[in-house]
Length: 447
Image 1 (tube, one colour):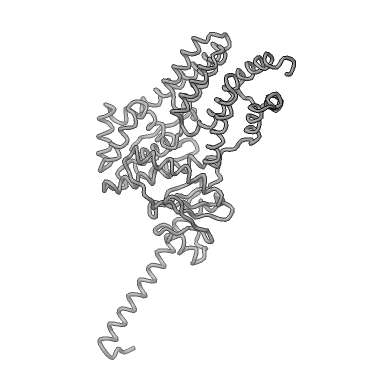
Image 2 (image 1 turned 90 degrees about the vertical axis):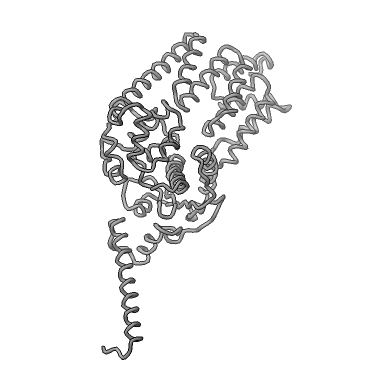
């Protein structure tokens, strides 16, 4: 073809350039999707959607509905719409916590995409064996909202989002922090616990072999879990130095700066720390196990003073779950001694400083204790628990319990108590024994 003018030549050049760019973009999209998912047979519109979802705030799946709540965009199906409420409740709580700890400002911009099953989640991520993930490109969290560990997964991925905000706030490169630490603090903030691990079976590798995300991901095997190493290292550091060091390390501008700061803080090279930290945690866990066993023996022998000292030791040395167990032990000790007011005071102090995971159960235990003191206070505590249940929308209990407490505080008190006992609503054995004694005195021959 012969071009007749300069304008035709320029036009042809522009057309050729555009055509080249279109072909290039199509090739890039196709290569990206095939590399990510391993599937070269996807339809073109599916490939475009998956590619676009890594950059823009669009869903990676077809036909999802979209809504916004408290600054978070949710993509969901009709089957998962009801799961938004529980996600929102947790994210609002965690937003305040992270903003306080890290000094970040999360004013919106996060997307949460629900997947109905793991096949969809794994296809979107491009790999199997994934429970959830955070897409750095478009600030989106992906998970199966009905997973039994959905809250841990959500908070773990939200931690990555907050770390992303932190990096942007201080103009820091994303890859400056070793992946073992990034993943470790994510599990830590999600309230993982060393008590859930058999520490003696944990394998460790060189921390430097877990610096990049690629190295971190490829290190996993049937016998080795990089998440376990990262989390346990972070928990051991927090136990020794508190949470304050996390922000200081996150401000490192490079991986080498990170290790320099860390090794200065711990007073040794990371290789030496690797050799000792797990053994120390194993020794501490064995000590806690011994204390738990001792406290049960002391309780059975009615050595309440000894049991009280042991429970206090557990509380001082353990994590939030050990603290919860120790507080309930201390309450049981007071109930076994017949000190009902002291037991109620302990529960009220615990509730005042409570962790959200324990608050509802604690209020229901307080309601049981108040049956020995003032049934009206029992009803008030149960109503507080009911209100919290309504607010969280993912904690379930039998609604009949409130009606029973209301009946106990009415002219049908004996009927209410009888229903409470016959239907076995009381869970604390010491309350149950003491209440039976109380009812025998107040209502002779009725029970």
